[in-house]
Length: 104
Image (cartoon, rainbow, N blue to C red; front, side):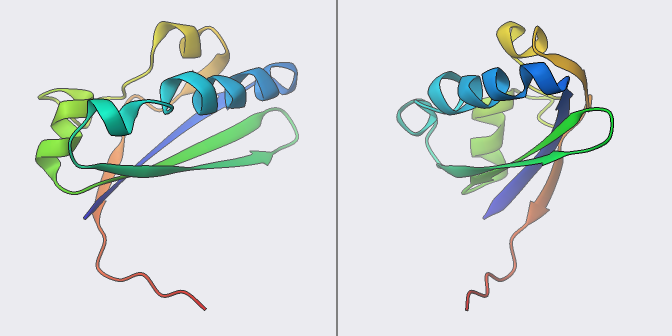
């Protein structure tokens, strides 16, 4: 299992709209469109100057990540409507192999 981590930042006034976009559009239908997509966690935190979002997407394999992001899968995949709400974002995503999940 692969986890894809990516960060983007919004102005405080745009944070709710951006989160809504992620929930209702960007990630809403991915399970139907991408074989091997296994979900996302959307993390949010406010800082002094902006609101940071971290998305942690889960995929069965790098092949599934490539289905989502293309051949250069480390490149950020940011739809135009998301770019309109972000004040900055990481150009690349990081990918980690999930070795264990320990829940209590």
